[in-house]
Image (cartoon, rainbow, N blue to C red; front, side, top):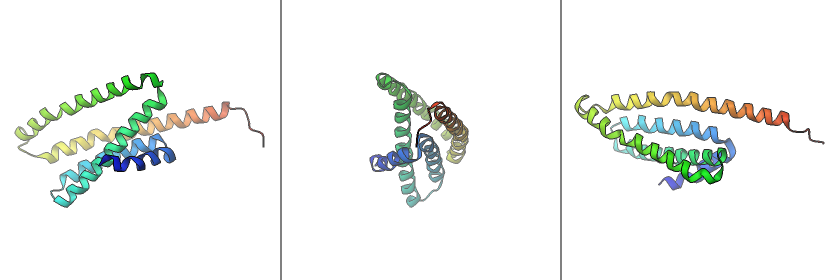
Length: 149
């Protein structure tokens, strides 16, 4: 169902810019985590929707970032590196689930709250990227020759 949200993400990317997509990606990931905590079937359908939105923002955002900031001939290698890192993080789920089941006696809330806390510094990272982009745009505008009316 992720493909349903990709046009919305592309429109957001075009109109608002890459940094808004990063912020919305983090926000939708945190919404997914919060919704997982609620033990209701209908809320879990919302969780699935939030996850699909998060995935759309995440993959569209990182692929556009790579395409905009690096030479296109390096695109396949950089995507492979990103997806390999994603695989490594995904493989951490197995020991985390074991820890949650045995040490925390099935308490998912603690693990999910920790996941939310881990995502919080990413807002600062996204804001820092936005500041750098604004400075670069201001420098480019200052260096451009003046346009005649």
